[in-house]
Image (cartoon, rainbow, N blue to C red; front, side):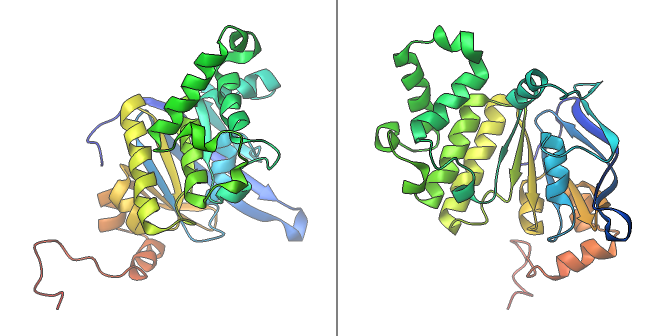
Length: 277
């Protein structure tokens, strides 16, 4: 799963901060955070509920503005001050969310969900140059990548699908958009174990095909170790541990990381059966 090397830094942050409320009621959700995401890297941001990891993800996506600090995109200070600039940014920065049931507009059918991806890629003028058959072919290919049949989904609303199918449909969107970075916020927490493994395999296959960076937002430190090149551990808005998966998880320095590890059932090396009973 892990790589020994990956590409250049293309998105990073300096002294990122996000506050909510004022005065005595002010909450610092993200506090003076720095990070670097490389091309083709798999990153996990790990922490309990309230640690600030989802707020950090929303700032990266441009859904929340930082209270202080700077985000740099491809070496330049990120500018999403206008609709056209945000649209261009979102062509390359996309997300899969935790709850597939709330990730879709309930009034849009599957065809519209996938067609929106073609619109985002091509723009209004570019869409006119793509024939109806070419559009359907793109949608069929995307569904095939996630082991779904477009003909069986066509003209259905997302709520008519199972949770696993909706998560796969979100990955089909990513297949069509081919972003440079994907934020995956607990993408497997609401589906069964079999579907969970399938979803992870699809995301990692997509990473390998287009050299996409994936940032997992998760409370599962075991998953983070298994899939990640780099791990950031967050506690109360602060990054308290960071490094390679081996550095951050096998050799933790933070008491918080050690406590998270203490909540995980002991995993024995495959060759060490003596202590496993």
